[in-house]
Image (cartoon, rainbow over the protein chains, first blue to last red):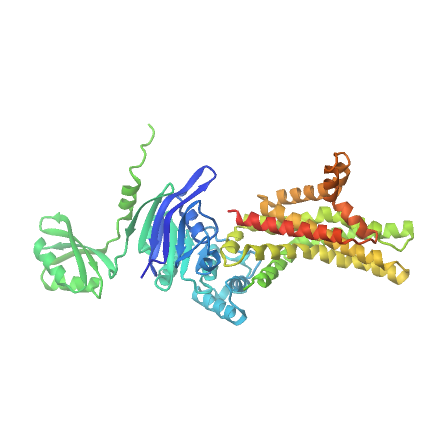
Length: 314
Length: 233
């Protein structure tokens, strides 16, 4: 299946400042693609061009084979967008706002009402549906913004820094919402926080000063989990045992933690879960000393791509 | 499908959810009531010519205050990004804002009609100039709304939008006096751009299609340039 979003040689100048420099990128259907980079790296500009808010200086962006400049209305109809600062009409009530946005997305009376009710239900906005938006907390505002982006069931959801300004509980909820949207929608999400990207994105595109440094896969197809183990026993025998477990797709021996104790990283999927791995090792007589979920080391990747930090002045 | 209906409804709600609307209508009615009473008791004539000119001058000052927030407020709040990324034509957004901007001046005019009713009850006015005067005021308000809309689409904030629209309106109002100083044919060109030159015939009971055409052109140019300003991004 062809990619849903194709960005080719995209550049954007703001006056004499180059904000995006010849970025090319493809986003597959149903995946969560993260744009990662420090503030001012061009993430928001790319999203704004994709959503039709800005026009590119050079290059093209195609969404479902529609050029976002020449067939802007059709392309915009396929995108739900949550801008960074969550702009909403403060003087509207939640339901009134969602209804207005549904009408703008071309939904008629009955369909608009049903879409609004579904979005209210999905984002848990029932208790605030008749409140003025100005009275809502940041977390609820964020949810209202996502609810409006879902109206009309767009193929692509674009979320710009969706966890900004949220407290830890709200951040966890937001992550849940984003992961729940994947699959049915293609999600583009930006963040400058590495740990957030690790948790929500399937792939990340790392940007610096408007340039795309690389695209890295965080979740491989069919991989549910990465596990890090410390196991007592001969390395080769342990590795062979691990590889026999159905669903374990890769086993890497990282190092010997201590004499007779190996450190392993597994990628599991297709039904292989942590308890199965543990049971298999223990019944084979190996000593399972530690088992933890192993995150992709995005920090190392980011530092590697963006180069060494500048030396502090003496 | 046109989105004019929901956009217009939203813009009207925005106009009337702001205290600016009520304050401007109140100030307008206070000043107009004073003018009507003073003119009626001093002149004792059954016409509204002076009232129309007073309303026109107030419109020069009030309409920019009404129109200043149309785009500038959306830009400040960031909601312009929501509007412009929705599958909606820029022209629909601009037309909805223009019509909503014209609502308050139209409401003010409707309330001003009570003065004509008073004349009708207690006297026997010549209705022709009264009808044409109201039409002239409506067209003037539409022209000023278009200027204010354009200023709001270009200005970085509401105050700049109001000041720029007020400046442009007042300049166009009195530009014919500057025209006399210019050599031919510039004097005629400048005089033709004058708001007062096109408004005076309406206020005094003479209607010309060319004057209607002038105000309609002003509206179309304002709406077109606002749409262009919005598309430039």
